[in-house]
Image (cartoon, rainbow, N blue to C red; front, side, top):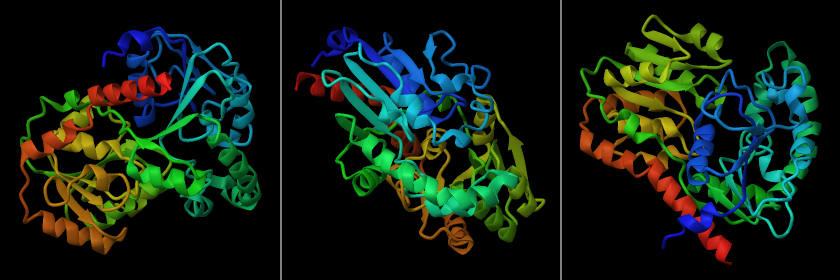
Length: 374
């Protein structure tokens, strides 16, 4: 069915939680805008010095845009963001498409407006990751205070979040893992459309050697980069860890001389790292996990934790290997098994292509078109 003309006639608003850094969720918004180039873009706060891909369009922000620290420490404003999103006036739109791992799904729309929310995950620090965040909130010297107030604050915000998740007409999940979380926490059904991955970016990468194991990630606790570091320490294997985030100092403390850190790498640098990587290590229980797909697109096998989103993208013993527990010993066992295994570059590339941007745009366009007709 040719639905492009019908979609192009819609007045569309795309609403994202915040635009203060470039990650997988922001790439989803970028692809949504390719499907709906006429859309207006809304968010709570926007930092054009940290994210440049939206500089050619007007971005509507909330009252938080002018609050001190709102662009740098959005975590401080979790209790205010619900009001910020509820204050947005979206009454003139035919379609509201929210991109949400936090509050954007809670925007208020008229009954005649179709609201579809793309859920990256139910809010981690309320639901699936609450115990983890309570243990390590990530606020440095303020952690003891955050641990004290977090239980009562989260209890209140969970009630709002559940109510907010009932507002969209339809929910899209980025993986089967998120489908199950949406059902568990929000008591709603959802349909999977996997997020887009820029496969073509890696099409010219040619493997030159197998020098090291590689991690590319934000440095936050739930990514479990510590497992890769400790496993490679014990095995005496060279490991390159590329990315940025608040856990950098802690990770450096446990790293041996065999571990090299690359801070805030450019896309060009990451491509160069893939060229010589032996395997990509991914030990997080992730909602989806874009970096394992990028690794496969670059021809690099993936050693991953066999639960969550990575288990949906990486095929065990064909495009990588699973370790079945989030422990150092389990990862060590997988690395040893990997070193006596072989993987086909064509299998890796073929699997990655399943998650291309063109497929995302086609599937999302088809979903919206179907719901508009109802």
